[in-house]
Amino acid sequence: MKKVLTGSTLKILAVISMVIDHFAQVVLKNGIILNAPYSRFSDAQFSLLMNITNICHIAGRIAFPIFCFLLVEGFLHTHDLKKYLLNLGIFAVVSEPVYDLALKGTLISPDGQNVMFTLLLGLIVLTVIKKACGNIWLGMIVTAAGAFISYICRLDGWYYGILLMAVFYFFHDKPVLRNVFAILIMYICGLDFSIRGLISPYFITAACSLIFISLYNGKRGMRMKYFFYVFYPAHFIVFYVLSAYIIVPRL
Image 1 (cartoon, rainbow, N blue to C red):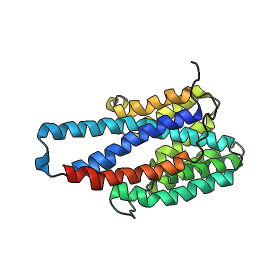
Image 2: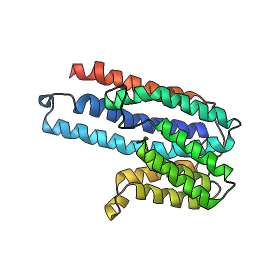
Image 3: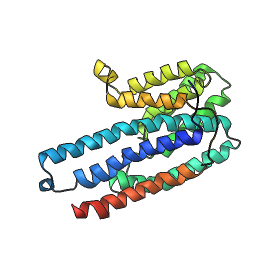
């Protein structure tokens, strides 16, 4: 398989997937489905809107594994880990009120924290694992601790993200094992251990992200160092405005 995707191309693909997912959640679901009077839609129209929303959420499953993979790549190639940690921390804090407003309807919500906090925690976990000098058992303990912290803090992606980042790090140079364990993590974190869990479109779409990751050629591509940092809170602001002030009043 020819590796044709640069890091910047992967990031753009992940951003597009994320935007589709968040558009469905903020604009279609929070803005229209949950707020529009029932009389605005026929049953068929409402069903169509729900189906479109679900399809968008399914398409959005591609984004998170790619972001986790790129975080590991950034960790392995950064020349300034402290700055990397600082940037993620600053923009996680800056993004949180916007994230809460767009998804929860309030500037401060304990119900969930944005994905940059997940990536930040993942970066801290990887840093500790690296300092353990390859001790696999200590690495597993640190990963489990990070997964537990992400769960109790209700970070976006929860333990799923921490486990994925650990897999991408431990099996960085072993793509077959990397993909096998990543798929296993996706299946386990889906919490449906039946055949239905294996054929779930959410699971299948998430697993398809590994195809794009397998096409990564190890090159940075376009310089987009601060693109995601800025774009992440910005797209929530745009969707919130669309939801609150443009789309709903015109229904």
